[in-house]
Length: 314
Image (cartoon, rainbow, N blue to C red; front, side):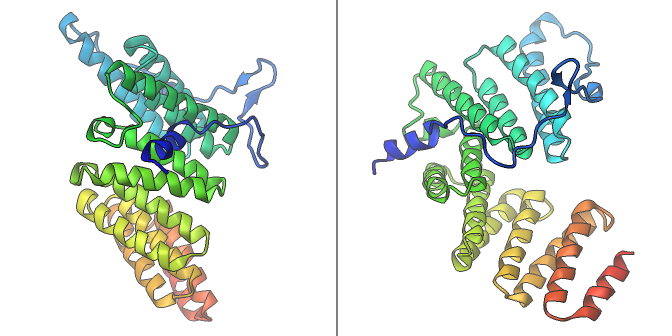
């Protein structure tokens, strides 16, 4: 298959109108028929003085970036209703200040798609990913670039790799593993020509490849991808970064399911040590890792170790 064909599949896979089982509706105000208002005003409130005329351009960029990053942070915290409201404001700001055909608008669409993924509203998520990619292609065309070409120009703009990588994440969630594999291989090939500046995106793509293979119970292949992702994330982001910790936990989970208990414990322990130091032993992340360790011990009949770990937690 030609590369252009692969990337066309990556950029423009058209989705049907199927409603998937397990979709969770947003909280709705039945009287007014709209998304229930959540106290998100604190995230949307301004507070900066009006910029001088010569600073308006940069002020617009800064304002959009703040909205986008706030919405993404809320998504990661699981505050999805507020994340959706804030991302809607980010999208409105992007289209008003930069135009309908702009990378910032594409990124806002893609962020909303990820929020709907978290809400398990996959039909809406897919539609938003498609909008993100349509806007992205038009924005590239305006710049005279070919988004379907595997070249340096088409991937150097911040956020483009994220849009493509998270489309692959959607495929994995839906167990569309062949499509996910083609997508991730295309993204990895695009990133490989750029080296360290795109290390974080490469680590994420390899991590998703590992997660896909773990889901398919292809543990040896998953092990290789986790190891590659881990090395890149550590060198690019550092060992205290949450993405690195996420890869450690994924590696431990792969060994756990594979019943390689010694290796699994080693990576759970490594992740727990970092989380205890950076987030504290009472953090949600630390509690989840300890719960996984308890299950690991119980599966091996090491009840005393499981009890000791639980007692230490209390």
